[in-house]
Image 1: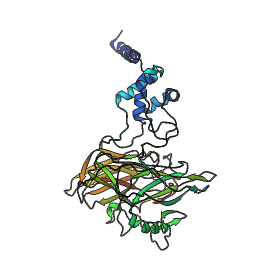
Image 2 (image 1 turned 120 degrees about the vertical axis):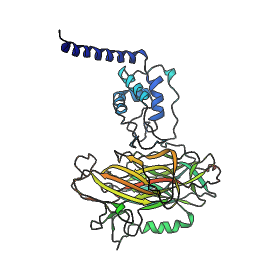
Image 3 (image 1 turned 60 degrees about the horizontal axis):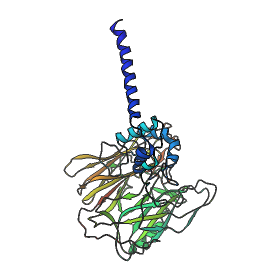
Image 4 (image 1 turned 60 degrees about the vertical axis):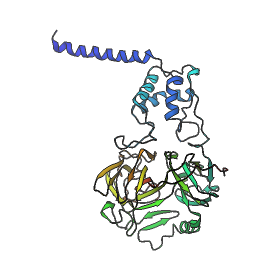
Length: 460
């Protein structure tokens, strides 16, 4: 027998031995749900995978998890779950839920050896959650009950809810909880100073009266960019950075939380918090999208967790957009940019990317005053269904004069399974079948503040 004929046989034998050894290794240590898998699921998954939450099934018990064992293995081995879309090579994030190699191997071995339950004595205590929430709010503020009428697919409604705070409060964590996820497309909760509440009410009342506006028009209670408005895909080529002529691409706001598809609570690092001044209101901007054949009642809420430790840095947010892009029909890789130069020193704390169904990827770079360029944030595979806010593990200073350069790509082709209609040319618009291009920088004032922890107040 020649060497050429021996080699393939030898290779086959070696592969068989490796496979057999791997199988014996799986069996050498019995992997069970109660002892090995439940701790992983409790730490990384059940925040969403629990009864009546945003995930499609609960994994809180063996009985609930067992039918999904093969699917769980496939998704974690491919690193598709838990969902996480930031590039692991750019930045480290404190809320990164991805499993370690060892955890993935444990789940793989559990399924491969029969997905056994194990001894109930090995099962750790299950996490305790407050119904509907991913945090334990100290205070809940809710809008008045609103009826989303049948078939009303896109409408923005604004609600001003008084905080009734008699002193400034510092917010460590917050979450917007929709009253009925079937009709709440998304919801912002923005702090409005009590002295400016009347002005803000008047502004929202006139929000959709765009008569004479050269760039926008409205249909019902949503806004769109006019088809004949100037087309500026490269916002960085214009002095406004992507905003309408004469208007900046960036704006500052105080937003404790937002509800978006797949978005969880926003928990700031220790020592960082949002300040809600005494007498303030929370303005809820709720985008309703009722595709059902019936009226639906909604009472969306904001849950607040007060800072329990002294606050060192006060937080706010920059919202940077391109408003004038145009995506051609059937374009699978359309590039859009925005630029914004920050007007003061700020500590980078977290990032959020926001686009609609055609969103493909988004990257933000910083050009520092000394000319140095750095990639801050990259989402190479954007998914409208999971819009996370990415909280940095290590905060850092962005000096005044730093330019934020955001580059987004859109897939308006038939190859995008989420695309509502690839035959349409698309501009900025508030409905989901149109598009947005926004980068949100959550930042803090570098100056130290002397603030004590807030005391909880009675829930509304």
